[in-house]
Amino acid sequence: MTGLALPPQATQVGLAVDIAAFAMHGGELNVLLVQRGQLPHARDWALPGGFVQPGEELHEAALRELRTETTVQLEPRHLEQFYTFGEVGRDPRGRIVSVAHLAVLPHGTVSVSGGGHTLEAEWLSAHRPPRLAFDHQAILTRALLRLQLRLEYANLALEFLPDTFTLPELQGVYEAILDRQLDKRNFRKRLLAQSILTPSGERRSGVGRPAQLYRRAKNVRVAAL
Amino acid sequence: MTGLALPPQATQVGLAVDIAAFAMHGGELNVLLVQRGQLPHARDWALPGGFVQPGEELHEAALRELRTETTVQLEPRHLEQFYTFGEVGRDPRGRIVSVAHLAVLPHGTVSVSGGGHTLEAEWLSAHRPPRLAFDHQAILTRALLRLQLRLEYANLALEFLPDTFTLPELQGVYEAILDRQLDKRNFRKRLLAQSILTPSGERRSGVGRPAQLYRRAKNVRVAAL
DNA sequence: CCCACTTGACGTACACCTGACACTAACCCT
DNA sequence: AGGGTTAGTGTCAGGTGTACGTCAAGTGGG
Image (cartoon, rainbow over all chains, first blue to last red; front, side, top):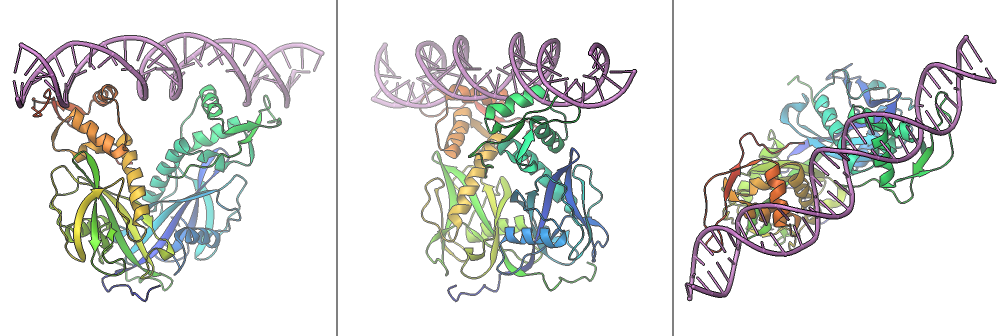
């Protein structure tokens, strides 16, 4: 601090974060939605989010809102800001600018329930969500685009799975995110060629031939940009 | 408006925009920088930027700052938000969150001079800029990355040139942005294969064989993402 | 116990894109 | 006329993506 103050022309606006948190459930890509308990848009579904506290980093605010609006126990495996929504009329309460974040939660039935200002929290279909409050449909659409982009550029799909997984499971993640079918053989070839996976033991699937289990190779990180 | 007010937990922070405006000059990629006339960082180079006014859209604020801090007459051919910088300590005056924008200005010697709170404005090398104020070097680096990405995904290179241009000129834009040399023949092959260019008349270059002039084909737009 | 079913694993052929590379064509100036 | 300068062109090798058929290894039912 230098004793300098914010100049008078420094417009004060509400600064918020919204989070599009994704996880896989039953072969489907789900997004975490909350049912609002307050006006405006009471009882409507919305992305979790809220105002940034003074002295709080943007990503910290995103994590805090995830934890208080929903009871998600697991740490996100990935969290990145992807766009800032600041259109003047986007919130009836006044000028609120929201820095939207994309989060990926690991596998495991993440039990959620309401908390904070929300009546309820639920995992719902990301590609076919219910009607959302505010401009949250636009935010979700953009989050999906970014997620699909990260699938190719980074190896973000791994973040959806437990430490050890089979190739068909990984393919399922890709298919769920891209919302289309992929070819088994080409998928296998492509992924193994990247050498980001190392095999381990076996596993039975109940039906059909057991699949090889893989884990992410050492020194493989999710790309940044 | 519904009569709803901003809730008390709506933290008030300073909302700003910063603009990384690019243009080609003499075969080099330049970025528009201003010399600050005020504390903090007086007399240091910085990206043009400033606070968002109440009721003003983010991209409008970016355009206004471009026009007032520098005397750029030309409309940007491209303007997009690319990242929001909100780290707590990034500005000594307090919590200021800046939505960074990437702008592309068309060809033509854009004369600039100071205006508003700036002593001077100048086009300087984008890849080897002077030392910059605040975290503007980080903003510029990220802007360059985005610009390079847009080169492949969209056809953003066309925005740097006048309506009609030669292939070697276009190649020059690519090389300046990527900061490396490209092969003539492969570049030509690649670009013409995309069929986003249509030929027109001839042109003399003063030296050497005259080059074919092209213009962008109809219904070719810059991709959004 | 055997057979049918289910799912995992693997290889090949083709189209396409990319990158390396050297020479001729057209115009200017002296 | 000739030298200087820049524009324009083709081919080949290697890699990448995609389409596609077949065998392998389990499970479960009759």
